[in-house]
Length: 285
Figure 1 (cartoon, rainbow, N blue to C red):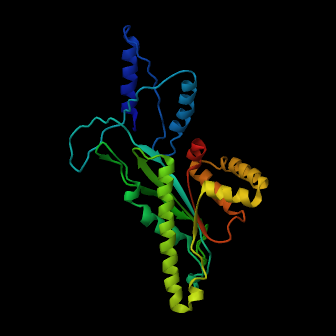
Figure 2: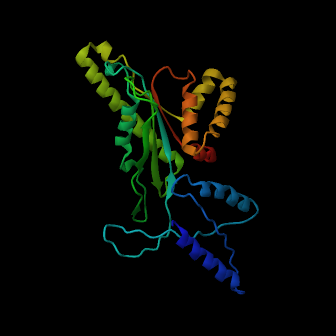
Figure 3: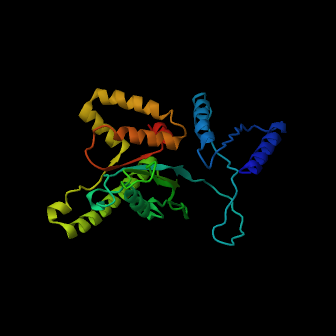
């Protein structure tokens, strides 16, 4: 039913305004289906609103027909909001170092990388926005999984997370910086634990034999590819981007891009790639 009541109310307002001969208001009704899953309605609407803007329309205000929510349990007050939150969906891809279950200290389990990242980001105050006495909800993980197809005795070599980050004033650059800092912290903690456990069974050289996972943003990884391979990488990346866009919904598209770029010999060891879902990345660029 979300959000048919709101749509009905807005259609009723449109009818009233249209029937009023004295009204001078210009109203644009934007219905955005699928807003709690893939946001297909809003992604489509952005392009249409841009066309209207380029034709001279200027949008002065927006009335959102979402319901109001309680501020605390058993709060029966009714609220009128004077603003709304933004939503970003950071995607984090972890490439580990595969090893046998009997030798877990010889590699880095990609599932552990993802789990440590979830600990660093879940409810993190680093992502909290405050505006006019209001605070944005803390980030939470919407998906976390490895990419093994079947059970076997090799540790997972790939994993990924999707995080929901709600904002009041932070832009994509600020959110991505916070994501990267969380990834760096998780990488240090994972490596520190590995070194500690390896040092119990060997000398210092053995303890440091597995390097700390490196953290990259998508632009950083792209620049690394250009520096290493030049125009050939630029062409290959464009094709990879095109192929990824044909992989289904944006979660599958983003994963396809991350896995595709990881196949290039840009990095010789395990790493973490943080970016936004592919649709948001293309819109921001």
